[in-house]
Length: 370
Image 1 (cartoon, rainbow, N blue to C red):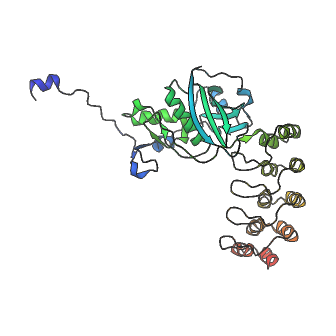
Image 2 (cartoon, rainbow, N blue to C red):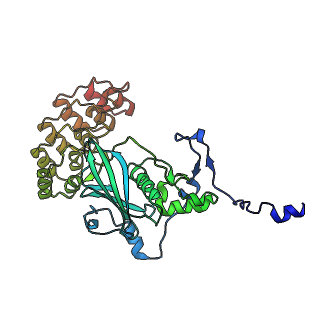
């Protein structure tokens, strides 16, 4: 090497990272960009805390409706304009968008007073509030106050987009990783795990990356929550305020579906008296009557039949309530369906109710359906 090269040669050659995480080539993913595979960290790490209060906080949201966070200001009171848009199912109603269930879920997300509220699960502290309006089936984020971790404003917007897709809609999309970590993939993965937990499976070193989705945002509405609590007064109040009795929650079910899980039928009967549609469909096209059949709830079934539910309604795959009863061997339910006029000849994906019973070798059901 020449003397010139020794003094003026390139000295900023990056140090090669030991045991880097794998990359996913653009041609191997639907976004057509280079992605970091975060799964070696995300799928193997467990979150722990030496602080018992934080551990308790992380799993304290099972019955939380988010109202308690309405008056709480973000830790970092920084404001920024925004223009994020999310499709909704006609209208997004106040309620719960994401409930942390394990310590690896890092955020609780709520929608109240036209605001998206992002709460750090371990601390129960509001970090970001997004101010929104709704127009023509679209939720529009106009302004954001707060920060997730003192990141740049553009990164804040991308994190909001990721949480609304990865957390709220349960879709695998690239997480926006800090650009200054691109030479240290494992450090980036640890940052991602701290920020997003196990939800982030893949990432991109682009702080402005925002994966789009056409899946509509739905909340576990306050009406759904009142239904689960059996709170008839709250149900009446929310009905008067214009909540749609037939709207689907984040799990794709209507309030009538939720009411069918209760031990007694008082809430269901009350919802029907208010005008809930007995044939309202879940996202998958299932009626509450179909759910009642699957749960072997003859009492619920009889109430729905009395309310005029369509016995022969078919879900998105073409199956009826009788298909379900036949396959599951619910004999008394099948008898009630047939007595109400169920058609035992409906074919769905090549199956009639009797063919499903025959496949399960349920002799009594086969005899009933012959």
